[in-house]
Each structure stands twice: as C-alpha cells, then as structure tokens.
Length: 163
Image 1 (cartoon, helix red, strand yellow):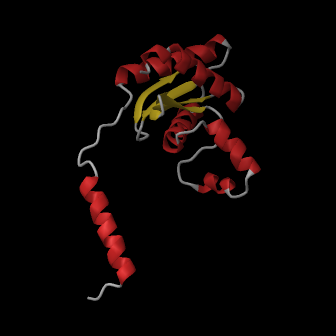
Image 2 (image 1 turned 120 degrees about the vertical axis):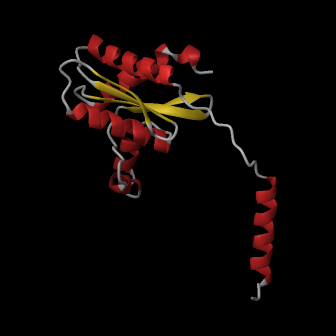
C-alpha cells in the first residue's frame, strides 16, 4: 500500500494526538440525591403557580435519574418532561432558546427531525461552571415559557450545591 504525503502526515498527526490523549477521563455528573431535589423543586415551583406538571432530571448522558409527577398532571407530561430534559442535556442548551433559534433559522429548523428532540420550552441544563452535569425538563404548565420558569426556579434553589 502506498501512502501519499498528505495522508501520511495526517496519520502521523493523529498518532501524536492519540499518544497525548488521556486514557481515562473524569467527568462531573449529577447525583441521584440532587436530581431528586431538582425534580421536587420544579414540581413545587409550578404548583405554587397552580400548574400540575411532571419534572424529569437526566444526567449528562441524558439518562433519567429522577421523575416527579404532580397530582392531577396529565399522563403526557411525563413524556414531554423527559424529552425536554434529554434534548437540553444533549444540546447543552435550554430548549426554549433552541425552539426560538429553529423558528428564526431555516437550517436549525431541521432539529425537529432528530429522533427524540423536543423543541418546546421547559428543558434547562444543570451546570457546574461550564460543565453540563445534567438537565431538568418540565411539562404541563400552560406554555413552555412557564415550564422553563419552574425549571430555572428549581436550579436556583440548589445553586449552592452546584460547585
């Protein structure tokens, strides 16, 4: 097999990068206790405003860690809260901002076709500094912006633990 000079240079550069890369990585992630606390706080924040919602908290990989569903919350609120949380963790962005971006940018509008993505307000990443350690999704208030307010309020309640 004959390598052309550009291909050989690329292969050597990749080998040098791989040799310097860490073999084992350390990543921050949300604990079960914190996930449960955030889910509870989100449901309580919405209940204070008269909204029966579900809240789902996922870890940095989008795996469900905690779910709370208020009395009288519709069954659809479970699925919407989970999809919002997963979308937010996956994109490391608030779903309300993503929805607004997709409405303004035709290229971003294609995000609605990604399996599992739900571009409705209510999904908010949970961060420690610049690291996304998880996300919370809220579904069931009469508007995604209200779901997002409950998610933000929940994160605000636990901000002292996000260090």
